[in-house]
Length: 240
Image (cartoon, rainbow, N blue to C red; front, side, top):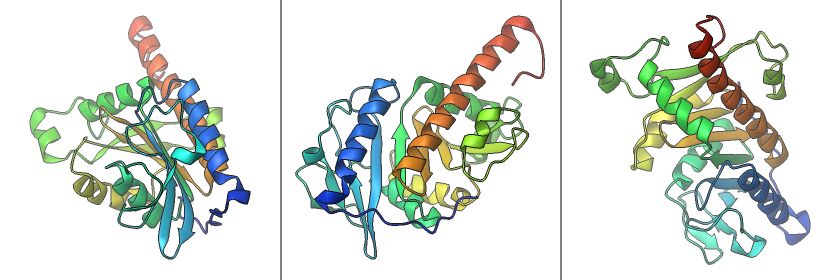
């Protein structure tokens, strides 16, 4: 669904990419999708060799300035800037390498955190998974959505009736292992994946489109858990 022939962002000061990335981070923080130091955000500035412009680890995402940003190489080593690269840089790099994305935005919203855990417990077919099944496959769950006009905000989606299945993976502090588990699912994913109890990763051709994808997907996640509440309260099926 999402392999891109992506135009690479220029890393020169005149490109304004640092300013654009900081503005996106500030807006994401304002909307409550990355409280405190949570979340991480990157843009591709060079393809060969691969380099990412990123927010550093451990900083208040509501106060990130252009001078705080760092540039990392294909191994996640810091090439420019004074900050430290997040361990999650490995997953950003895997997404970019696999899909050709030009930007990756990672949020910790309430909806993403809640529904990622819900999907993992529900299991592959939407039914509660047994402990044994959950232990056997922690990377085979999906959160499925269909029938919503806002789906058309995702590139390539032309009808509200199209179905998307966001892959959900169990959280893992070993980011190399987690990235290896995620990689085979990225090409067919709807520009997104969920990490259980952690949050949402979203990508796209460039920062502007990725930010749009994030807004759409956060809306869809918010709407989905509200549907689940309404269905539980009314007993009316077919809402989720």
